[in-house]
Image 1 (cartoon, rainbow, N blue to C red):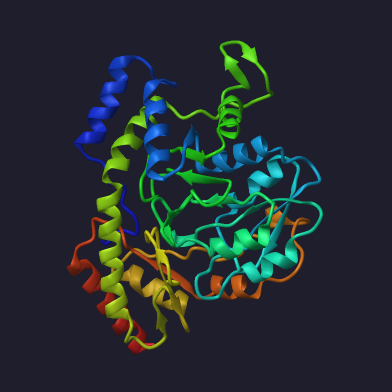
Image 2: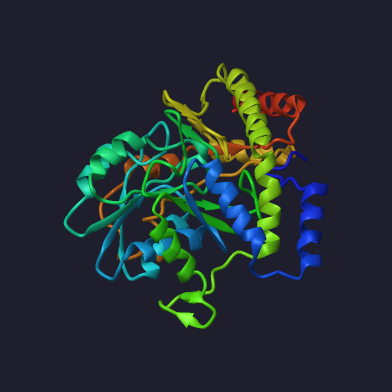
Length: 359
């Protein structure tokens, strides 16, 4: 079996966890502070706040920004639903835009049509590990804060700048299947120190000091155990990213001649980190997925439906999103994680070729 994703844990992570257990500082402490400093430095951003999940990162960033009921926040129509649900947590309204049909990221040409007097923030998603067209998005946004959803883009580069460093803030997830993990966790990075300080208060019951509550906050802290794992994962991220890029290159070469298959389209200036290696299957996507599974080759559809089409978004979605709807019927993600060997990649390419030729 070739798995779709595989968290990579070694002796370093085990030792880091034991270090925390022996310290007795399990809930919050110096490990979290160090992880915040190290990860924000990796992103080329001044400040970071570690939180309990990627969803919490978006939620707290919006809250710290002052998003309130009646406000509108624009995001993509094609992503995991957590890119939109935190907007609803605060009583605001999500407003969706269609995607670029080649990169699957937010289409800046559609963004300009969605902005109105109620727009308070814009959340582009760097889907599959390739940054959205941030120059165009920032230009269209003007003074409206742009919050980068970097849940799939740890270390991705856009025209020399790292994901999370271009907008007002970057919001990351460390879920087990991400390019690096803390088991569960998230991070907000920003150059605005007062904004990060507000997130740190909100994540910890609104406290400035113990029992000194300045805000109505939450319990959305990252544990010291998670932070210790994250510190070790961060050290390994560059090498693991390079392995993903090499795997993607092998796929690009091997899949380019298979009729009906389109490899990922990478726009100039982008250096993606391939959280997912996502192909476009012209016909028979579900048949290909099923046949690969029968051969023991993991694969997954990210995503089989758009966010606006979800029952959870009933009443919050207006308009049509033809590119996103079309993508949901054609995209298929293949294993690309660092534990794959060149022989694994060859086996997957060979299987796809045989299945497509027989279809």
